[in-house]
Length: 170
Image (tube, rainbow, N blue to C red; front, side, top):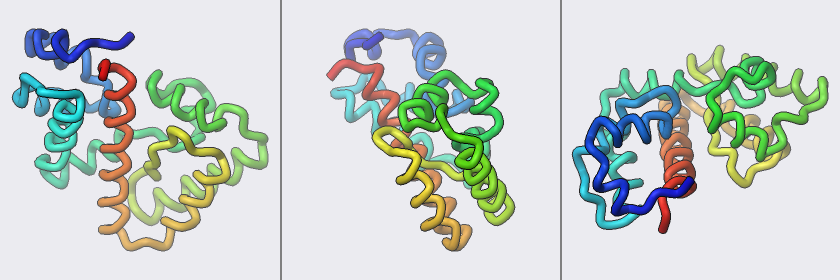
């Protein structure tokens, strides 16, 4: 379902937050931060408001946002217990059809990444494949923690962008 920008701008604040609370994984505070920037002149302005809400949050709050995301092709995804948007995005990248060997490789990489950084590997998987995701995992695992924190936030902003583009009419 796609909403018009006029409809978005007309939503009472509580309804706005309820409508967009799931855009940032289990983090309705992002929508709460973005609502204050209305009315939006464009869909892009709305996306920027969500990105600004993330960018201006404390480091601890942004870390909690990163940690709210599921592992890519992780146990929760395989069990079907991730948020609907994450399930669809991971399925679109073919992560719902992994062989046992591929699942084992993802599990090893997820575990190594979490052990090193203390949060899950984040990648906006829209348009990605199993192969490109695994390549990104391998390329980013050697990074220093500060770089990966920034990379994770940047990927979350991309995820938020994709989700808002899917929900708001141009």
